[in-house]
Amino acid sequence: MAIDRAEVVYKASQIQEMLSGMAEAIVRRHGAGPGLAVVGVRTGGAYLSSRLRDLLQALGATPPQHGIIDITLYRDDWTRLHSRPKVGKTEIGFSLDEMVVVLVDDVLFTGRTVRAALDALIDFGRPQRIELAVLIDRGHRELPIQPDYVGARVETSRQEVIDVLLAEAGFPQDEVVKRGA
Image (tube, rainbow, N blue to C red; front, side, top):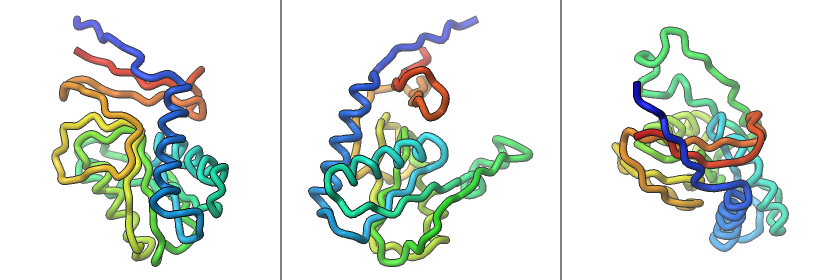
């Protein structure tokens, strides 16, 4: 039986610094005016997008529209993963038409989750632009998708796993953990 090694890669204060840096970069690029939406991919991206929205407001930006998108039925592998997928609620109560949408997720790996999220977003309107913000980019892309805002890049093998553990999800403290061989 193999032992699953776990290593804390980033702690709560470092995660907060990463999110603050991403918020500052967004304000530098887009200013503090209206027309910005922050949409998180359920679940980890949803928590991070809420934090990012609050940080943008703290920097003086017009409060951005905020939403959460569930991509379960947009995934290209859902039939292989579950015979009865658990579909979460999408919460986008505004039109994305002509908005700059910052799509937020916790970990970018193959790019397939982002591809599914892009497909789902287009069902809610035609944004002016969609940008991608991820807390952790671990590489190993299978699709030509690159983030606009990155908290950190973490070297991994394809067999390793990166978990972003957040207080909002019931964990005792925020951490980024690497597991595997």
